[in-house]
Length: 270
Image 1 (cartoon, rainbow, N blue to C red):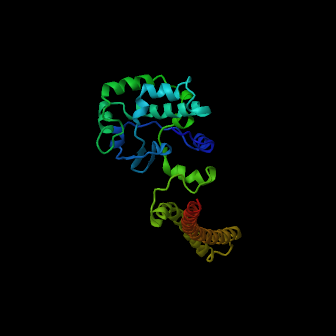
Image 2: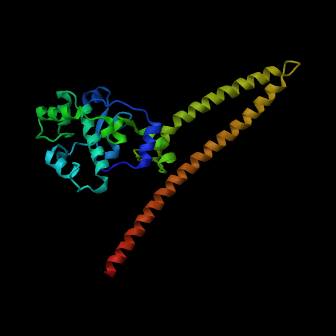
């Protein structure tokens, strides 16, 4: 099990709050679809009605594997043995919360999921989880001291702390990507439109009154100017964002083709 980098650990601690791990049958009650992933970084990450769960590898249920590769007396894992052991223990401990009832166990062994190997029965799994009850947070990596993580929040802060455009891209089309931004932006525009209409009514009433309120005129003027500037900035931001995504895809494609061409040249020289 690969450990998480320091940026991701700091990112989790500062910006994400702790969430409990919901059992599998409760995931079904919430209407979530369980998506299989082989990437540990996506384990227990959820978005809307989907949650990603990594299946439990067979070798993690082997006592011989733990003794040979993850025990303190073994040096097969090198200097990072402690971090690997903590990450592995934390990942295994998540199944203590995912599978709390026999109904959860039956869901985990369904043909479409197979989160648990078929040859593991309910009694043996209970014996394993009973040992995991003694595992404290200090014995697992920092990532697994937290529960379910929201992917939308991970993607929101990824450019700031991970120096990546997103943590995991789940939108395959431009329309899906920009569609999630329309709601908040339209809400802001609706509020600003109401304020501008109220100001317009106020200015119309002021024309029929002899003593004018000069400060109101000044506020309305500057707020209107700021609104126009804000609309222009947001429109330009949308255009630049689309252009950046478009160019990034082309740059990636061209880079991959150049790398393949270079490998072919190196292979022909050999």
